[in-house]
Structures are given as C-alpha cells and as structure tokens.
Image 1 (tube, protein in one colour):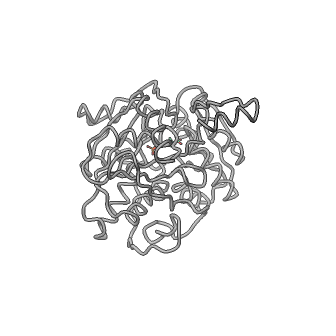
Image 2 (cartoon, protein in one colour):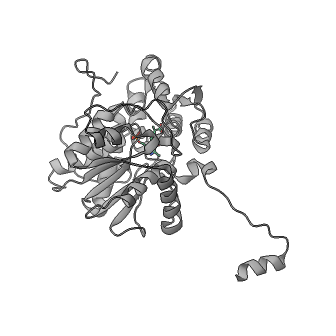
Image 3 (tube, protein in one colour):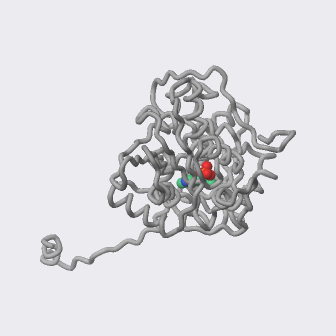
Length: 357
Ligand code: F0G
C-alpha cells in the first residue's frame, strides 16, 4: 500500500491546479493548495511563529499549539478525511506517541475506531493518556517503534486504514507549515526540523516548493534535519556520504518521539535536504535537554524534547540569514522528563521570608 509497484518507493501526491488564495483559518485556509477542499477539522494549524530571544534571527514555529499538542494534527485532519471517504471505519497507526494521540482524537471526531500500536516502554505518559482518553484501542509490542511500524505495514493495513506518514495524504496536511511560515515571515533562509520517521521535513519542503512553483518563494530555504545522536541513521549517512543509510537496531535518546532507527521516509528526507542545499545533523541528549530548558526559561515556550531538538540544532549551527526552528510538540506530552522542585511553606511567616528574597 502506498508503494510504487515498480521501484518499491513511497508514493507522493501531486495536486493539479495549485492556487494561492488563502481564506479562512487553519490548514483549510490553503484548500486550493490541498488535494481536498474541506474535511474533518478541529482548527488545526494556524500555530504561532514566535521570535526567539535565544539567538538573532531565530524564529520558533510552535506546532505544540495544535489541538492535540503536536504537528501531527495537520496531516491527521486530511488523512482521516481520506480514510472516511474511502469507506473505512477503522484506522491504524504505529507510533512513538503523538501520531497515536492525534489519530485517536481525529478518528473519534470522524466517528471511526482507532487502533494504535505502540512500542512498550517507549511512549511518553501524556501521549498514552490522550490515546486512552479519545478511546483508541491501545496495542503494545515488545521492541522499538520500527517493529510496531513493520507490523502495521505488514498486517494492519489489511484490516484498517493506515495513517502513518508513509501515507502521502498525511504529508499533504503537514506541508501547510510552510504556507503559514511564508505568510508570517516570507521565505526564511533556513528551516530546521526534528527528524524521526522523516516525513515532516519532506512535507514542509514540498510546501515551500509549491509556493516556489507559483512564483511566491523565489529563494527556497535550506532544509536542515536534526536527529538525536542515539537515533541518527540519516544524519550519519549524510555525514559519511552514504546513498543508503545504515539503520540503527537499538535507537536510544531521551526524546522518545524520535527514538526511531529505521525511518520509513528516509529517501524523501534525503531529497528534501539535497534539493534545498541543506543538511542532516545530530545533537546529543544533553543538547536537547538544554534547548528545552532554554526555550522554556527564555522564550516561555514549552517544547517536548523531540520538538526542542530542532532548537538544539539551530543553536549548534552557524546559519546565515533567518532561521525558523519547528517545535513539533508540547512539553505537557512528556511531563515525567521535567524535574519538579518544590518548597515547603510551613507558615505565613516563612512564606513572607521567601517572597522577600
Ligand atoms: N517531533 C515530534 C514531537 C514527533 O512526535 C515526531 C514523530 C517527530 C518530531 C518526527 O517527525 O517522523 O515526520 O520525522 N513522531 C511519530 C509518532 C513517529 O509516532 O508520533 P517525522
């Protein structure tokens, strides 16, 4: 499913008669750039672009401000609509958590059942809670995300409509990130994106290219993909000049959303980076944690760790011109990662002493 019968590569969507005529709000504001003109919606998209205080010319596209707290909602709105129109009543995803939360919510809204296949012990608490809250059937497998995805691709698609990012309709929704950045800022010089299964970096690149085809973004941004060093098959392949990545059997990083060793969209990510003159880089867990704290304390932005990886990348690189770092998920997704310090207040005198300091 969704593979070319000749070469085995993943399929792509090509929208005929692209037209730039934004109206309304959210992703459907760009209906004339999308393969569908309307669909299931919760107002996804229209997320803020925030000027950062961490570095000159750095902007944060805060996609944690989507309805379920991650960028996945952009694609899920479209994907669930296609699923419903194709007559399906069940959807299925493998997930490190955010796709599951989003699929669960959008399936609920569309009146469909959602099955989410999760790697045991590798999913942040907030995301699990969302999947449960929205009534998804939660299926847990031993192993990493990559195994869950293999199972969905091999068996799941026979029974339910798959909504992982190998499904190109999802990427059509996600490309709207580029349109929003363009409306708010014009064409930046660099767009930095965290990379896990590697669909989003391609989706955003596709969005910019479509603007360019319409003469709107004459100088395209460089696409810069950031992986966590314990789960960085693409950044490594890029650095070593390999045409095909060596996958990572046991991916490891604090950023569980991108704890992925075998990104299904690897070829699309290479295309985005190659065509745009960008790069794939890695950051270590320390840099990711530090970027999360810096963003939270200086910009007021609560990013989940995978989302902060793009900022870690932007801070570690010397990038000329304007840079947009996409923060893909909200800090509340993974509350267990943050150390909470409290101060016991035994009396009002003690309270006053503390407040006086
Ligand atoms: N950031 C967050 C917060 C994510 O949840 C993901 C992917 C990514 C970045 C990477 O995006 O896969 O398009 O390269 N999460 C998937 C999931 C794998 O199951 O929620 P990508």
